[in-house]
Length: 173
Ligand SMILES: Nc1nc2c(ncn2[C@@H]2O[C@H](COP(=O)(O)OP(=O)(O)OP(=O)(O)O)[C@@H](O)[C@H]2O)c(=O)[nH]1
Ligand SMILES: [Mg+2]
Image (cartoon, rainbow, N blue to C red; front, side, top):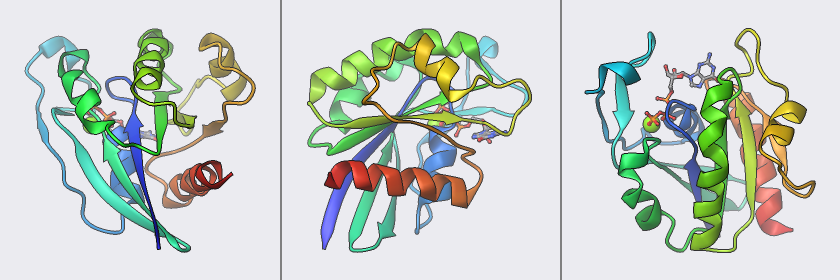
């Protein structure tokens, strides 16, 4: 039985907790707290992850342990703790929020520094109006050709499963 530790990271509000929740075979462990900064509150979002999300998913003969990170930079100290001994990371972005992509290069750099593991980028919230395409996001993030970017809707189990299948293939190649 293979076991992988995969980090789900990305900027504030990208859909990390939703992704882990949809992916997981078990009810996830979350550490969501009410957002205290009024400027950060969104119409459909009153809570934010302050430490981690945890869930796991069985895929074939592998178990993927998924650790969602906080998105706000002030909880960045958790990123280092969570990324210890990771096998890969998944970088989620909100395809409907171009401004949020500003922070993403920095997040990738930070995780690459922790360990030289493979990663893939998920262009989340593709169900929304006026979203950036995967090509546009690739360009904005200057992603090298060898890094996969996958469209996704984190509320849709089939979409999330597809990402995990690709992540597993990446881990096993
Ligand atoms: N339409 C749509 N909404 C989504 C999708 N994924 C997540 N959301 C919504 O986006 C909001 C943010 O999702 P979260 O999972 O809390 O985001 P997060 O990245 O964990 O946020 P932080 O922990 O605060 O950084 C929630 O209201 C989700 O329901 C998606 O694919 N499509
Ligand atoms: Mg969260």
